Image 1 (cartoon, rainbow, N blue to C red):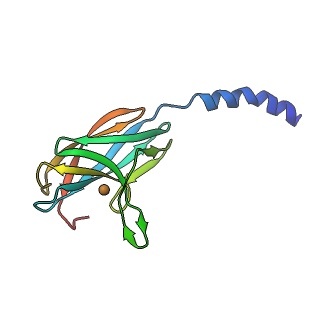
Image 2: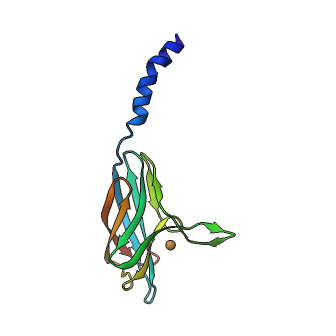
Image 3: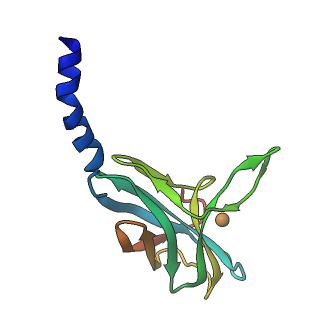
Length: 144
Ligand SMILES: [Cu+2]
């Protein structure tokens, strides 16, 4: 009886497993901290909300910087470090926060300081969802 039920359910389970839904990505709360004069690096933070299937954040770009990279900030022996990431997993039905002291988008080679109140165009590239253009609000140092 139990065996028959399992056999009857097997095709249904296989179909469900194969039909993985497309990702449904929303990028919210994008911001960067103001930088001091002469500082050539900045960081962009955001909240990535995925209400669909799994995706991957594979890169970023901004006209305000020579390059934008995905970084993590692991703490090793009490020292905060930064490490380049090839990609950031965006699991299905999950919210991924890019936040200070954790995963962030590093802007390298800024064309000038990030000024509080400035809006910075940033493009996030997702493996499945493609490029997403968002606007980062620059906040004053210490505001967050
Ligand atoms: Cu960094």
